[in-house]
Image (cartoon, rainbow, N blue to C red):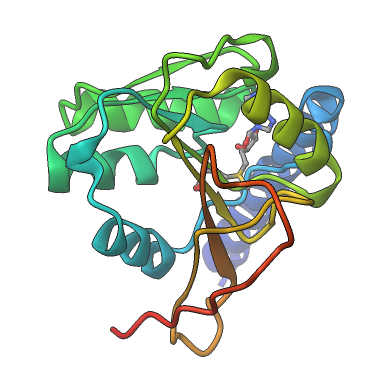
Length: 199
Ligand SMILES: C[S@@+](CC[C@H](N)C(=O)[O-])C[C@H]1O[C@@H](n2cnc3c(N)ncnc32)[C@H](O)[C@@H]1O
């Protein structure tokens, strides 16, 4: 009985410390993330995106805040295309690095803020961030990306941009919209096309 109780206390302590560390890190990088915390895109949504977009058409794919690397792993596995990710949360960065090594991926992640990066060579970007920073992101992407580049934003739209398509899972919980914008035709009245994804 005492052994079981001791085990429960130790496991609870480990969980508490892990959550505490996770919260501290989130708090410490808040000035860089602007509220875009380390919350991975649900796997069904990643699958929907890679089922819907032909990533083999792109030469330079960037992930703005790569989290645990699930998007880059899925893209590379399906299309053989490498993704370059940026990450400022040290826990997410380490998880992503481990995934790259374990799965022997050619994709990469740098421990750096994407705000300081020049994205003009990218022809496709993917992000899942936070509403507060989307206006600033729209200005950066609109300024740097070339005509025809695809911008994919999970959950949050770029204010004032017109999506070429909006994807949505039919999943009962994970059915947040994914916005696809094409640079060059991204300005104008927001017009939701409301495309539904069929699993
Ligand atoms: C909601 S998570 C999404 C992670 C991943 N893209 C996914 O879809 O699973 C957002 C991630 O962006 C990272 N992030 C936020 N601002 C960033 C910045 N300025 N530079 C690099 N990474 C950033 C956060 O640390 C977090 O891991």
